[in-house]
Image (cartoon, rainbow, N blue to C red):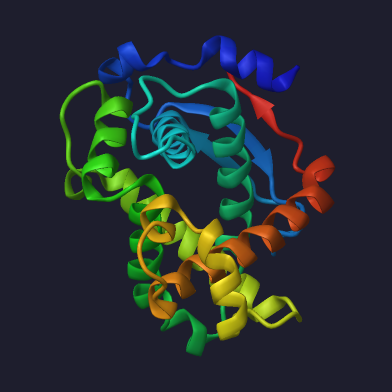
Length: 221
């Protein structure tokens, strides 16, 4: 029901150019925030719209491009946003904090591959804004990618299972990688960041299910 309420107020792609900057569409509580009051987090419309378009492009074959995001893409985008925001705000030890910049560059490349390359990334952003834009113009994309990188680093520090896939695991993952990668000859170093990201996403999704009832997600009119 909550998601249905959001879908009723979510902007359709045709009107993306008219979005008001930083409009808040949802808020939730971080159940494990460092402050006793459980820090309140916010979901901004522009960011979520971009994330929904990115998911739509990830799920579309390279032979076609989506003309809009669907309900499933929006739901997946909101789930990713919630868990990435929660994990990205966890404090990191200084030695891991120093890794954020490099991890952000890797996360951006993984995202670009996942949607099908630089041109499709620009097309997804154009769909979100309702006008032609390119990735370097979109500050929200930098926020999304950096948040994802910080969340992944926190998971690496916090979870016990090994993160680094073996060569055998990389070869097995290759056909499951994004189409841009899976259709190319096997290259362990190109597959590795995608295999790691997929493994970390599984951990993140498991964590989300554990805390979902505590998030107290509220969709705002």
